[in-house]
Image 1 (tube, one colour):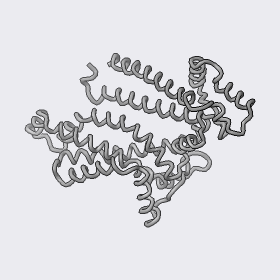
Image 2 (tube, one colour; image 1 turned 60 degrees about the vertical axis):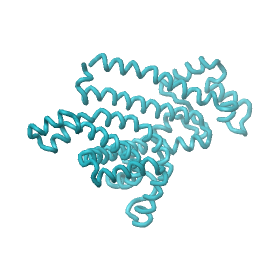
Image 3 (cartoon, rainbow, N blue to C red; image 1 turned 90 degrees about the vertical axis):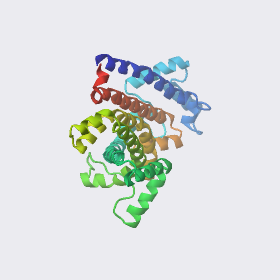
Image 4 (tube, one colour; image 1 turned 180 degrees about the vertical axis):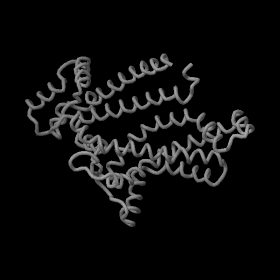
Length: 317
């Protein structure tokens, strides 16, 4: 077990190294002088030289990388010249809406998709199975922003049940109650969860249906185990590894969907900050956000790998 954990931890290190190199080269491989792009068209040569020196662009590529990665380890992701703030401060100000959206979407998707896929596998060929197949195709085909606008039209404009845009914090001096906080996120959660539910439910259905054909399922039924126990304790438990795997892989879809969803609903989170940074060519902010999203994705997949130890005891040996 300890060797498995150590191997997974060591395997993460080269991945993080490659990620840091790619993020570092985003600014350096951009067309033109990065310092001139950041400074803007009206900047003087002295201002451009000052920005070039602050970014460490006056040395070799190797020395620039070590200077940059050293600052990253110190918690310095750079400075936004467009917003006149450190990147870490911008991320700290915007991280709550993004975490609320991402974590809520993940919990909603798991709560809906796993029972849906399990029941569809149990009643394979039935009406629920056919509905799930059609829903999966729709979930992968319809863009996130189209789903968002349709939900806005139905629940916000026509029925007037839910707010359309904006975000009110759950913590801080201007915080709102839990219900008001959840009410403003229901539509974004539903929008972003569509493709995630389709993915998890489809994999759950395939994994559980395969588990139901195994010999140990027939043995359990022959011993008089109830159908509910067979489905949950035997079939779903043995299908947990591929389900958890696809949840970890789907985090990439979740990160990409956050950018679109926050733009549609005007949620001032990291996704909207990413869009603003791209439009304004704010390279330090882009670097910091890509690095943060990449590290989060690698960390979540590391947790998924470690969860196999508890989901499948055979892996411990």
